[in-house]
Length: 260
Image 1 (spheres, rainbow, N blue to C red):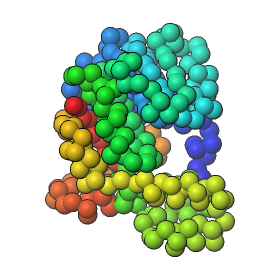
Image 2 (image 1 turned 180 degrees about the vertical axis):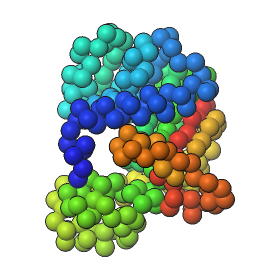
Image 3 (image 1 turned 30 degrees about the vertical axis):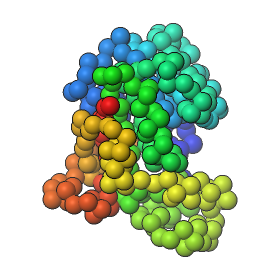
Image 4 (image 1 turned 90 degrees about the horizontal axis):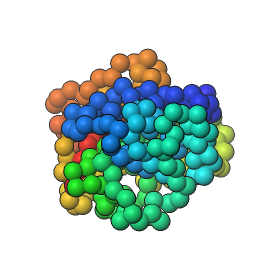
């Protein structure tokens, strides 16, 4: 496990930096983000991704099922000059009525791959978008070198071992046990294995649920790696990015903007 996974302030700062440098400009090509914009982040955790939007004066809502992380988010923002524009909700998104409020922007970065029944989810969350709203999603395809999130392993060897998460579940579980991972870590990693998503399945879901893809980018080097490791983002080159299934193994992050 890397130190950044334990240091919540560091993690918050990394999220904020990446979103400011890459996500906001990515969205700004398609819509004007200003102090009249309303923004929702689903699975916000400590809400580092929301900071650039809060800094811009947007009306911001963050929702997460983990109440402890919501409390940390409130702590991080307690002295922010625009804190009156912030709303944090600790709940399951399915318990929130889409009719109550609609948003100009919805963001989910490194979250969709953790959600069960993505088909149902994407159909439900669409109703939170305004008619001309945009939905940003960034995620690692399951088959990429660390698509299993094995970097959270406490064993240093496993945390740096690529691709072994795509082994059959019994073999994957056995390896995690042999290398001394806790039952909690094993359970969490197997859950990610169950919910991991490929580029092709994600796009089938978008089509089925009536979304339009406004923009997409295949990243060979994830933009977040610049903040974490000092590596410059690199797009996946053609023809690899055009080959279904194969491209999942080389894409460390997908960026999408979709709309109704």
